[in-house]
Image 1: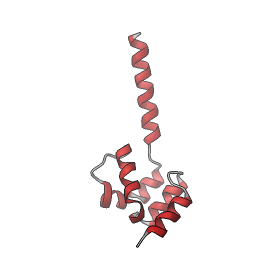
Image 2: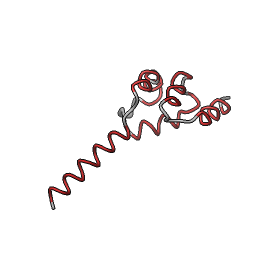
Image 3: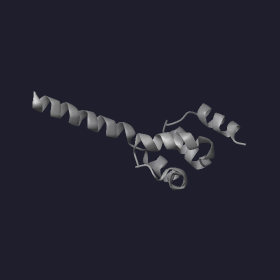
Image 4: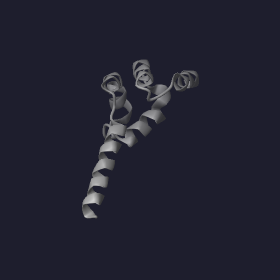
Length: 86
């Protein structure tokens, strides 16, 4: 029973870390945005994703396009962000 629990925990950890993995193109395109807005959060964390979503309208166009290409946000999300800019 203990082995099964350990295996299940390890499997969930791997799946969770894969789900949070960041595409290398996004990492490159959003590097400056990360340091400007969200560097208090660890890379590949849900906290970082939440921070970047909160920053939304202030992300650089390069970062936004990389996020679209990686499927992190949709074109509609980007359009809303651009329209919301003052």
